[in-house]
Amino acid sequence: MDFITVIVTAPDEDTAKNIALSLVEERFAGCVNIIRGVRSIYSWEGRIEDDTEVMMVIKTKKRLFEQLSSRIAELHPYSVPEIIALPILQGSSDYLKWLDEVTL
Image (tube, rainbow, N blue to C red; front, side, top):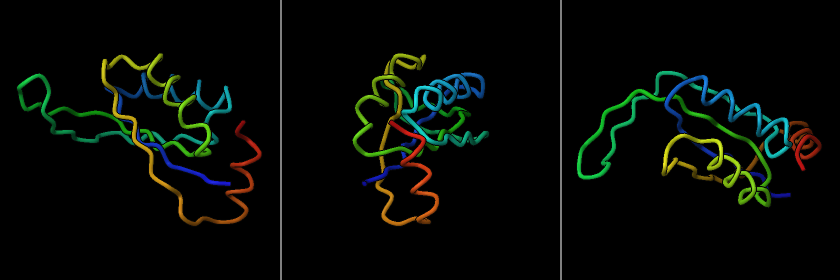
């Protein structure tokens, strides 16, 4: 089984919490960490932006990425939300077994 970590930023903690709850309840994710106080500097519509956001670190199965990504896009207020996936190359066998059991 291949697992991934998906990184998503959101404008505030309430938005992130709502997305996280939906993903876990719908079993697209086993766990979502919400990290406050992330400073994002990026180019948007010809301007350099400097914003404080929150970051979600989402653990899931690789095969669920498209469904998870679509669900995030439905719930997210940004027109172009950051949704990027990184492979989990290794992990605790007990944790990965749990992740397999709690996701679709």
